[in-house]
Amino acid sequence: MTGTILITNDDGIYAEGIQMLCQALFPPAESLRYEMLVVAPNHEQSAVGHAITMHRPLRAEKVRFLHNPELEGWSVNGTPSDCVKLAVEAILTAKPRLVISGINHGSNLGTDVLYSGTVSAAVEGVILGIPALAVSLTEGDDFSYAVDFIRRLLPHVLQTRLPAGTLLNINIPAGGTHRIKGVKATVLGRRRYRNAFEQRTDPRGRVYYWLAGELVEEKGGEGTDVQAVMDGYISITPVYFNLTNDSFLPELEKIVDRLP
Ligand code: MN
Image 1 (cartoon, protein in one colour):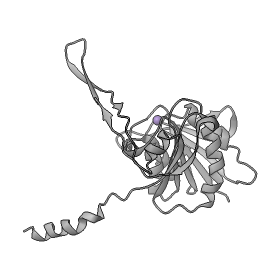
Image 2 (tube, helix red, strand yellow):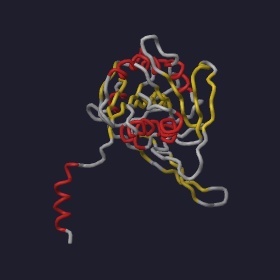
Image 3 (cartoon, helix red, strand yellow):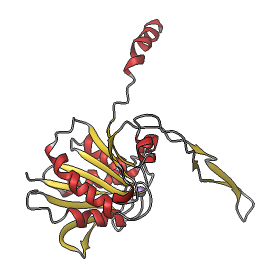
Image 4 (cartoon, helix red, strand yellow):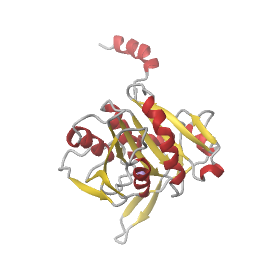
């Protein structure tokens, strides 16, 4: 087994989650032979979704990891998706064998995956034909259990052929061994927010809005990632992007046939 594991995130290359992940995965264990490359945004890019940069130049600056002087890293003035694209199409000479995005500070569950820079970086990986993991710590900032879990999961992921276009969205609750009850394979649930915008007035008397939605705690639904995390389990969801609703096609065809 050889090839490169590409690491990125949306919290920025200096965030604790990505730094701890790099320290845990590099250098690789004797049994696992891989190279590793880190290409991540130079500042926080959470909730930028799948945005890419087209109207200004991208710059990549070499970063030195004090704990891992052997590890190659690049800090980019772009989005998580930019980082994956740039790494695959400009920095690396061969396609990486895996993209890992994270470990994000905060959960990426249910419908929130569409806003998530963390998940979007993994999506960019699968668009480019590379298997990918998106990894998030749902609360707190103790990444030790989460990085250990990914280190233990990695050999299994490298041995499994993920279906084309599919990434694994992994959410790890806080609390480590004492509180985490196990691991569940899940489907994406739904997340709802209340009072999404606060309306305020600025010092010059003009109204402005600030997104401040508070999560509505509700049952996630049987088998969902939301419910699994609420119940204290690590959630792993195989996510793929088939955005076509096939079940509506026959009816749509009838409508199309009636059109002049
Ligand atoms: Mn983030």
